[in-house]
Image (cartoon, rainbow, N blue to C red; front, top):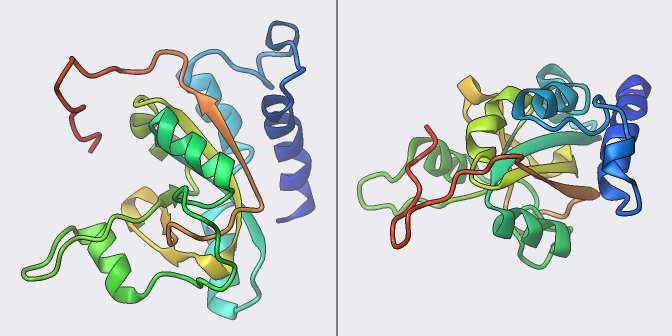
Length: 188
């Protein structure tokens, strides 16, 4: 990650990860309390799409910051296991195949069941609709585990057992909850 992004990411992610921080005493930049403020702060953390694409294209892999929205349960599983999908991490897993990417982005194909894989974004605003289910999962992951996903969402897909360098869950200030016995509607 370029030094400037490291400098911007550390205060925000560090403040969130430090359980001893008194959130009421931190500035609104470091601990925003509304969705738009959190998205704005995350824009200073996530690695730019072009930087990620270049690292993958050239094979000069780097650690990058990405975000996704999701349920508190799923996000916390990733934080606890330090893997993208909450499974035991496997440093040898590599990136998803082209077929796995097509399945994730395009959904199920005739005769081929859809494989749901973790998809992060390099544009923080794209994570907000999913974060309403619980919050944001902010991760640092090496580009060797990524393949480009949904172009319209600036998506980056990895396998469930892709190891994370760092991960933190940011709860949404006003998460949406499903009515008892009903699933939440799709965020798309």
